[in-house]
Each structure stands twice: as structure tokens, then as C-alpha cells.
Figure 1 (tube, rainbow, N blue to C red):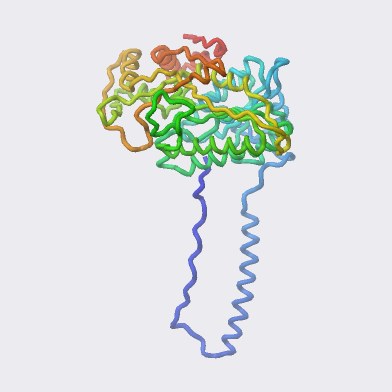
Figure 2: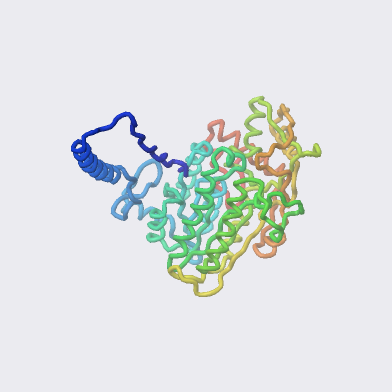
Length: 445
């Protein structure tokens, strides 16, 4: 992931030695001329060197796109891109999925592809967590016929090339810098990805003709310090508890702006603690499983009143159904080539399980499945951006998207643990089997 702080410091000013003076006016005049000519020469040389060392411009159509661990000539890339993006059914959509090698992105991409939509992925394979897992997901996607272009959403030139090559009907924007606590270590990455990157996607989309409909991942974190439960889309979201939440809230306001000015159809989805096979290693259920199996002590947070922190854990298959429901009900954008032609659809939905579970209960379920007693250290919830609880009101999503979560936490964790054990035992065939029947949410264990 690129950072915003890679800016050279300003050179200090030269302070001449006051004791060192010329007393001859002729010498002083000669020195002034020499200084002037030397300064001009050095300035020209510096400009020349800067031009030589400046970053190259985005790849032109005559060069290449990055398509993974190697570069493929654009002529070949275009064939792969168009093949991947071509719908296989007469009613299929053509969808660009950003963050396609991520947890939710992989599941959504496969579900779209298997029902006949054309899907093109975009991912930068950053190192926020082990990219080996992302590469493993990429292989599953490629086997299914989903091609991923390796690149960053902040590369506007690359985005423009993709939009020039394919007429997307929809953009499923799932690329983001995730994680609440990491924002305290690397705040710039959140602004870079979640704000600047999102603006780039919207900029290219609003200039397209026709404009695609946008479905994007917001977060339950936007509710921040809200104390009304369950969290409703009508509740206030102006008290974020973390920088991550603030960037997602900013994204919602930016979405409103592009909808209002350019006529983009935009649907935001507030995900509530998504978990399941092929999940993110930075999530509690994932690293709890890892540490319990290794006999390591896990840290469990408690609220100020000594109660357990609770989360509205939502299984990945339910989230995917919500994403597809949002895409299928999204109306067309009303703009064309950057100009608004009429009012456009703007929506926001909670996608949760509407059944909060204490983290202590999560640990108990994992102990039961793994048949291992966890070593626990209970500590007060620190002020690192985490909130005490989340609880989704999903009435709106049920009404408008037909969203209905069906997987309880114990059933979902059983599926996750089966995948985890097979994947990290080296049985790639078994771990990938989950995706082979993802359309029916079946497992192969």
C-alpha cells in the first residue's frame, strides 16, 4: 500500500560564515557573476535530473497492464479482460469488482460469475495481512474464470484503461484499508484508500458513457458512539470512534455528492463483522482459532461495567446475498459523460445478522469446536477505536433487497474451522472445495 507521507523534507537555508568576507569590490563583482552562472547551471541540471528520475506515467495503451506476478502484454491482457468481463447469460451484468482478492471480494466475484455475470477483478495485493492468502484466493478465482488485474484504485490511469476496454454496468467497490486498530499505526493508508481511492473510482465512473451503478462497502463502524440499539440507517453517524470509521463516514458523504452532482446511482452497504472461510487473519475469530490451537493466551476485552464486548457476527454467505441483492435492485445512473440528466438512486443499508453475540460466547464456541480449552486474559476495552457492541436493524434491507440472514454463529464457525484446518494443514484441494459449490453454500468436508 502506498503512503501519503513519502514527501522529502524541505532543504534548509545556507547560512554563510560572517567572518569570511572579501574586501575587494572587483573580487566581489566577479564572485557575484560566478555565483549567478553557477546557480543557473545547477538549477538547469537539477531540473534535468528531476525529469529523468520522476515516476513514469500510467501505462499507455501501447504498453502493458499488470496482471499478477508478471506483466502481460496489453494485447493479451485485453483478451483476458474482455473474456472475464463478458456475461455468460443474456440477462447478465458486467461488473468491475475492486478488492477482488479480498475476503468479501472473492466470495462476491465467484457468486456473480457462477450465476452468469461477467466479472473483472482489480486488487493491489497489499501487505496489510499475509498476501499468500490473497494469492490463494486469486488462484481460485482464475480457475473459475475471473481475471484479476493487479493495480491500485489510486492509479486513475489504470482505472481509465479498464473503463475504456469494458463497458461496465456495475462497479462493486470493495477495495479499502480495513481494520480499526491499524489506523493508529498507519493513518495515511486509510485516507489514501478509503477516501482518495474511492474518489478515483467515482471520478472515472461519472465520466463513463454510460455510467455504471455503484455498490460499495461502507461499515457498521460509522455508528461509532451511537447508543441506540439496534443500529438503524436513520440513526446519527457523526460520532466516529476510529479513523477507519471516519473515512467510511466520509465515503458516505462523498457518495452523496457524486450522486447529487453527476447522477451516479450509488448504494452503500454497512457490513457488520463478517466472518467465514477464507476470512481475514486480523479478525478476532481468525486469530483466536490460531492462538487457541497453538496454546497461546488470547486477550478478551470487557466493557467498563465488566460485561463482555458483543458483535453482530454475520456469515459471509449472508453478506454475499445482500451484495447481490443490492446490485440486482440498483437502478441505472442518470448521468452521461460527467453530466447529470436527472435524479439518481442513493441508498444505504445495514447488512448484519441482527443477533449480537458476546465475544466470550464466541470463545466458548471455538473451544467446543476445536476441543481445546482456551487460555484467556480478560482486560478492559482500550481506547483504540473499538466499540462495546454492534447490533444491526436490517428491516430496510429485508424490505428492499430481500435480505434474510440464515446462518447462526455456531454453524458459521464450524464451517470456518473446517476450512481453516484444511487450508493450514496444506490440503488446498479440500480448502478450495468450499468455493466449488459456493452457489449452493455447500461444503466439501
